[in-house]
Length: 189
Image (cartoon, rainbow, N blue to C red; front, side, top):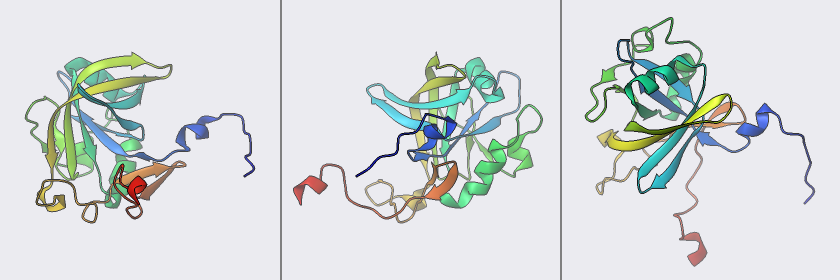
């Protein structure tokens, strides 16, 4: 197989697919806000940490640092328009919940509201913030998870046939394809 060698560019950040998430947050004296993020990942199982990155000049980063918490909301592939709307406007100028007809849910363990319309909501406290140049990596310790019952199996796992999350690949929105197999199970064939 022949490989093409290219100099790294901004586009190189988006060569591997990632989940699109909407982080909701609130400051000490401000309306709640939402920011669309294409950099999200599971980072640790003890403590239970996830990570997101937010540009240092973003309003949402300021709010998260004020209150020390945020909620990661996982939209379905049918919510690309909402992700685009929330990612293309600033909460400094508008209340995104009101403007885009989204419902702020009352979180159990954090001050920041969750987005009722998103099938999965993960309440996080800010465990650590690390400056990485023009972005900060936020490590969120998971405090509580909300999942729409209609996407759950009887054993409370997510049924992939009922929930298709929104993904980012090559600066485009995508949905997931078909299931290939469970971890550690493909080697048993």
